[in-house]
Length: 196
Image (cartoon, rainbow, N blue to C red; front, side):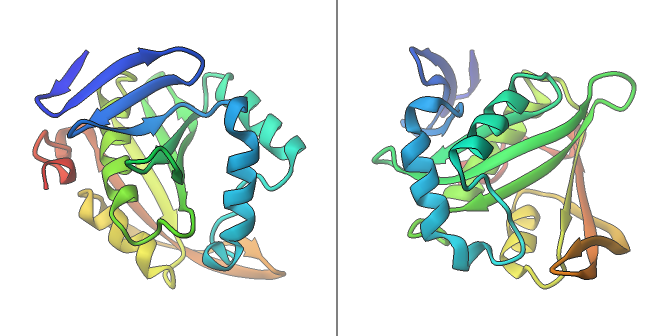
């Protein structure tokens, strides 16, 4: 299935689906084959994630996460470098395939690959998949106002700020505000960030 001239989807053995962006497989379906690599990336990225992201950090959490991806209400993607290293992860959760056709987006990068454009390319490919193959209409991301890197990522991919949800999530014993960012399929174009 061709997404554009530079984006294609192909089947690959045990690793599941992969997206190729400019001849580079940017997305990979999460697999138990790379559990150790994933958990090592999470461990070395703790300072980067701070209180903003809570990726699976144990074998049990990792396995439960893979189970969620089989439920139909969650989709997981790993973002990869040109060398195939894990650069980050993007998940769509709380998917409603009925009237809303929507989902919630969560993502995190891994050290040492953060800040090198992999998450922008990965999120662009995820938007293609979500709005194309999965026929979703709307994706939302709830972002801590202090997480400037996360805010910039969704802005680069065309999300718009819809508002502030006060005292929405309890982190380290304290209620925190979250910004609500969203994009709908009509706002996502083929000349998105992957063409850059």
